[in-house]
Amino acid sequence: MRDVFLPRSLEKLWTYLDESPGALVFAGGTDLLVKTFNGFPEGEALVCLDRIDELKEICQQGESIWIGACATHSGMVASRLVRNTLPALWKAVGEIGSPPVRNMGTIGGNICTASPAGDTLPPLYAMKAEVEILCREGARRLPIAQFIHGPGATGLQKAEIVSAVRIPKPQGLNLQHFEKVGLRSALACSVASLAALARLSPDRVVEEVSLAWGSVAPTVFTCPQAEETLVGRPLCAASLREAAEIVRHRVRPISDVRADAEYRRTVAGNLLLRLGTLS
Amino acid sequence: MKISFHLNAKEVSVDVAADRKLVRVLREDLALTGTKEGCGAGECGACTILVDGDPRLSCLMTVAQIQDRHVTTIEGLAANGEAHPVQEAFIEKGAIQCGFCTPAMVLASVALLDKNPDPTRGEIREGLSGNLCRCGGYVKIVDAVEAAAIAIRRGNPK
Ligand SMILES: Cc1cc2nc3c(=O)[nH]c(=O)nc-3n(C[C@H](O)[C@H](O)[C@H](O)COP(=O)(O)OP(=O)(O)OC[C@H]3O[C@@H](n4cnc5c(N)ncnc54)[C@H](O)[C@@H]3O)c2cc1C
Ligand code: FES
Ligand code: FES
Image (tube, rainbow over all chains, first blue to last red):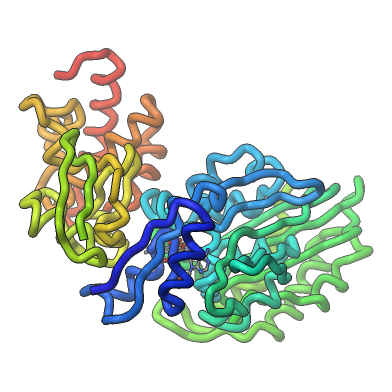
């Protein structure tokens, strides 16, 4: 049997973590409890973060949007700030799992799980988000791409938690897009996904673009070569085809129960082609 | 560990291992077997309960997490002996085959109608997308939720 603590403040959390340094911190439990069907193996305490109100806030801080690690997917769907300023993230969280999974699952849990299929990750990479890490001694920040090391592996140290993600407010971007391809529309892990942010001139010349794919490599896949191919040219079928070819060469997908690697490779490119059909 | 919470409008306390799954405590310790454990992994929705009014999966919660919360299980919906309009509509429309998914479908529907009293069929399907019916009776389930929405809006529980 393991103790389960429900600290109601950060101060209380640090006290629990001092008392059981090996404790496992969690939030919504939608990843953690799937792994423990018949109960937890003996071990140190579990500490649930979901009563710490300051970790649930969503607010604007200067030129950034600050989303507390324990903000649930439903909370983000309901947030006007997320909807209006971070539409790609908003679209992504609205498609996670199912309504009860979205009521429980959190953005911090999605980041710490560091799954190649984590749906918040492509938008967070494309927006160059930073992960805020907290321990009793203080805070540090890491760009998301540095925080995530590989499938299930992050830069989190003992006695540290993720407290928030800080997202630079997208400025002047008139294309903010997320698309996920799954085997069905609810309760389906992505086979491939794409977050795309761009600034287009009035005649649709790409002035700036940021792209990030999910489920086609061990971590979120970014492709500066494809971005360079698009910049300075109108967003049209010809330039997108060229960029998609580069992407198909560079992704490193795996085959699993959901799709084989070749299919993922094809879809990764096709998701890019579809940008040409957005108005 | 002693855990106190509000269960179907009554205050209850249980003394159980803190890391047990909530669905098992509801079924095995509190004898509330309306809540089902189907997949035990978040996929089927059969274990859906309402926590402070929102659908959550009791197979993915430790019992300790329920401390001080308000929990509604299917047994609490007709606590005064009168079926909830959603329950009436499920019976009326024949939205039940084996019944395994039904308690959770009903609770998810109640929560959906609470937030959106006049949903489209598409919104109903989306709202119930976390609940699988292995008998495949989805059309009648959507019919029932539509009918319940009308009944509730008319303020007529029957
Ligand atoms: C049926 C089902 C469908 C799903 N569908 C999707 C989907 O479509 N897309 C998708 O991306 N995901 C999906 N998921 C996975 C999961 O719901 C999400 O990844 C969710 O965001 C996890 O959040 P959580 O708070 O529940 O994580 P938890 O289970 O609480 O935690 C996950 C891990 O992160 C750690 N952790 C959590 N929060 C913190 C923190 N603040 N600081 C430090 N460590 C922390 C925990 O120790 C644990 O190792 C699905 C899960 C289920 C069960
Ligand atoms: S038993 Fe909980 S979702 Fe299937
Ligand atoms: S009625 Fe049998 S599972 Fe839905």
